[in-house]
Image 1 (tube, each protein chain N blue to C red):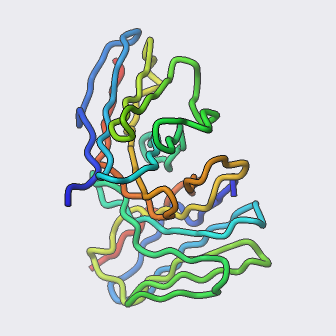
Image 2 (cartoon, each protein chain N blue to C red; image 1 turned 30 degrees about the vertical axis):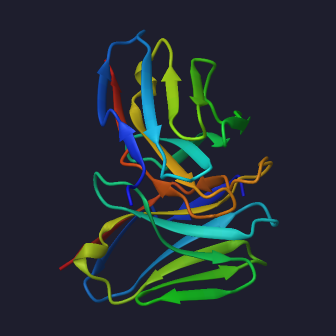
Length: 116
Length: 113
């Protein structure tokens, strides 16, 4: 919802290891949770999203899990590669939104560095 | 097809001057969003448009900020009497009206001296 907290702010892993980034949200009515990747100097790009009717979604080396009871969701990257190095942002719908378009509140971002 | 484009890519201005930032959404996208990203920070929502109307302007940081959208396409974000704290990257995104996925532009880096 309107308050989205993201941890950690920085994360360094060895190539081939896994990386996990967590976000919590405040609005229990939130039903859509995207993750964006932003490489240095480039625009944010959607890498995976999950809706509240499922608990996990996978796409190759990337997965997202959702715990509605605890109001948190996590991004999991397995077998990390140097090209995974970027800033990752989670997001959740803004509270008190109006109109049909999806408005999002973003987390503060996690700088992931994959060390070769 | 062409993605979201923004102009200028960089803008340096003096404190007190007005600036206009432009966003061209993906053709056919009815929803358009403006965000601000300060150095090392997350994305701060500013305003969004559904068609030409902006149902929610509560994210604009002050009355020096305004935005408009014409013809359901191009949008302009205007900052009047710029201040140094306005320095940031201003990102625009667009989406189909009923879609959740937002596609971002490359941003405009604004520097207020």
